[in-house]
Length: 493
Image 1: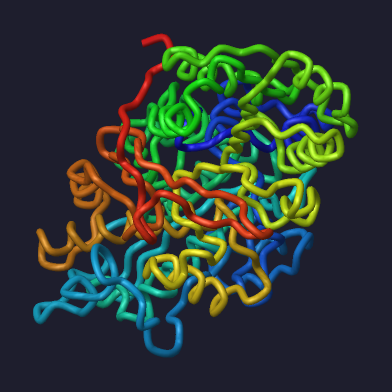
Image 2: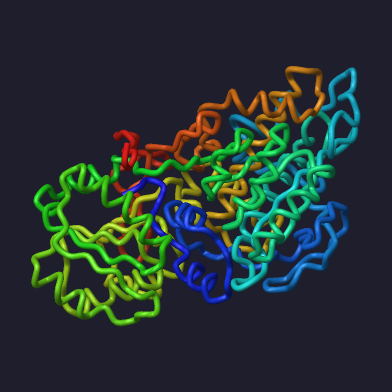
């Protein structure tokens, strides 16, 4: 049971197969291990710069509405935002401070690719159209929102930050071609999100002097020497959540059950999660791989009750299937001592779909703060994130991809500021890479559980949530913070 989540995107994986997409096993598996079904970033929201589907990095692309195809022009993206920064924001790390203003002696002007005396252009390559329109639009929204926030503080050493957003159209070849096209135009790649990042990784690995700051999904992307993820992936699981549930009901872990979606991503994710649980003493009385098209789980509930299941783990399933399973359990009056869900369940759809009563007392665990809004009053970064998302993309919803886009942009800016402080405000790829290699602890000011971008180390901290009265409610956690009480289990290690 991994602190960084459960499986995910089951419907996406099925659609990819149906459409002949060629995402390889490692790509989709990594996505499954890491990402839950989002609240829906939607298509690019009104006010967002247009996405590029043809490799141009120029400015002036028109805004896209949800589901609209890209116009073909590059994004002029994150220009200077108007108004003062949110009062909650940027208390630590990147954002404002000595790295924002133009140094007395100037910043060196056009010091590298994508850099002028008054701007730095970065690229983001994400899936925006294809089988699931707007699939990872949140990644662009989040990246853009943070860059606009930083611009409102003065940018970085007198330079405004611009985003060139590109759509790989759910296509490996397009991802690779776009990556190649941006090498001579963009200073760095920031906040990208695609099931085909292994294709772009071929290009980025061959150009190790180019910073790539995004949450790598494919194994090839994870291994790039110049990739830095805000929450790196390793095959395995944080043990904290596993031990938490064991402590809540020690006898329940010897009669556990799970249902796993029949797509390779979910099955691969489950292998590592299950290994970690077995390592901690869990025993499984019932497991079944289900077809993602199934809608009736009554027979599973009957079987679990007959086998005396006391702990139900649903972390390798999509949010709609989880809702159906929980509804069936309630209808059969089946209430395990513990039901635990992964981050795919942290979705506004879950409670309306299953019904609040069906979910009462169910646990979730997350590798992030409650970015949908529950933590807004206690976590300044959540408030800042939601404030600027609303300001820059008023019709977009927050989801995990948006949060990772924001965090990736913050990580990049932190490195850009550190590099400039070391060399008189000059922006160079080499300087940013050197700065990134020194960032061994990063949590995006509390938005995420802390990981090690430079050392490619995953987080071990987590948040425990309980559904109470139809709401996601923190339990046994520091307000706005994380539980950090376990180590990391490497599957096969």
